[in-house]
Length: 260
Image 1 (tube, helix red, strand yellow):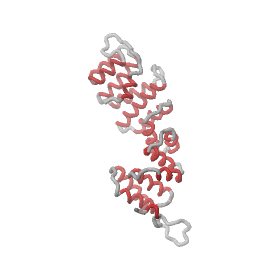
Image 2 (spheres, rainbow, N blue to C red; image 1 turned 90 degrees about the vertical axis):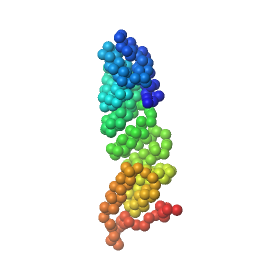
Image 3 (cartoon, one colour; image 1 turned 180 degrees about the vertical axis):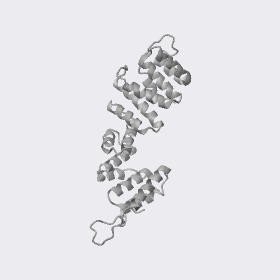
Image 4 (tube, rainbow, N blue to C red; image 1 turned 45 degrees about the vertical axis):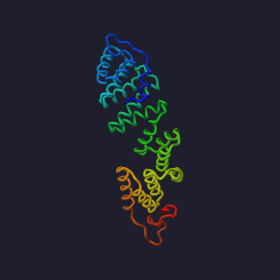
């Protein structure tokens, strides 16, 4: 089902006529997409051939998406948004890029999704897609880029969790801990807490935080990430010499992390 934002986007262009085309305007395109996506794709292609210009190319790209030609649709949208000859303003280009980014995500093409979302961001478009862009930047360990995006977003639990991850990556560990302490004990929060404790050199506390995850519901992907972190911690060499100036990574757990 096409979202209201996408329908609004399709309606941004005024009617553009092309004799003998079944679709001759964006209004026609919107109606045909809702009724018969397959027929809309064929008619949009004819509209392009008959000189429908930018509106026809947009219609065809959306029709391709509607019939499941996801890669072709994403490619067309990306190319159209980057075409300086296309009659599009900055917001229209950005909206096309966001839709292309959504399609690249469906195809698990994360680098292409990040590039198109980042291009929309550079054009000044605000929206929910920015949270996803921040996550894509974090996956690449682009901590500063992610934090810059997140600083412009409303403080929600998900955004604050992403901010904590970015701050941890930048070494601003106390700020990250403050954010995490304000969040509910969801599994993803406890995993990030374990990563933060490990970054602070508090390996025993990190292991205890990981143990809490076993009592909370979560996805298999989350469990796999937790196991990988636990293996990383357990692979650390023990420091047990009495005159070792550094504390042992297996020192007792701090009282504040003990279960109530």
